[in-house]
Amino acid sequence: MSELDRIRTVLRTSQQRTFPRKMREFGLDLIVREGVFPPEDFQSWRWFSENFPPFNGKTILEIGCGFGLPGLLLAKTGALSLLACDINPKAVANTLENAARNGIKNVGVIESDIFSSIPPGRKFDVIFWNHPWNFAPEDFEFINDVERGAFDPGYRLLERFLSEGREFLTERGKILLGFGTNARDDLLERLVAVNDLKSVIVKSGTYPNLNSTYRLFSIRRSATAYGFRPSMSVDT
Figure (cartoon, rainbow, N blue to C red):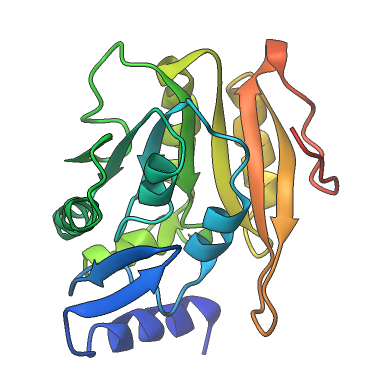
């Protein structure tokens, strides 16, 4: 079985559970609804929640919010505001529900295909995306919305994200991109260069018994950034 087929099997099996499912993470009482990317089977959200760089007083845009973490945690513990979005309307509803359950007021949640519904002219200090780095061929066809949280065929979404994202950044703003070690660094490096951006790894790590290392890239306009150094890890 290929890695792509294995992930599709996990996604399909995840939707055979009994819903809604309850979770308590980082002091938050959370609900996971049917049709939302399954947090129990893919743990990257946990690692990024634990390793997010300093964000106090920052305005944050989260792409692909899923059931709500890490965005809601950022909003509750220091961010000035959070705008979370997802292409899956079930994820949007789920994040709104979890924000209300935990009394988090400084958050808005909208349905958006990356930046398609973000108001023109709105700027953010941080744009975060836990990118679906599992590479699939360009002709890959999604079976359902859950699969959209796991695959980026031909990295077409990443190409859009990097080409459009800088228009939504404040002058000193940055993109924070979640990327796994089984991702295509060669394509990321090319897209960063084509869009006159610079990138550096700010965090890298894993969990025991998980066959993946998670990495967080800081990406800025070339005039204010570090060079692309995929083998390095620095703090910013």
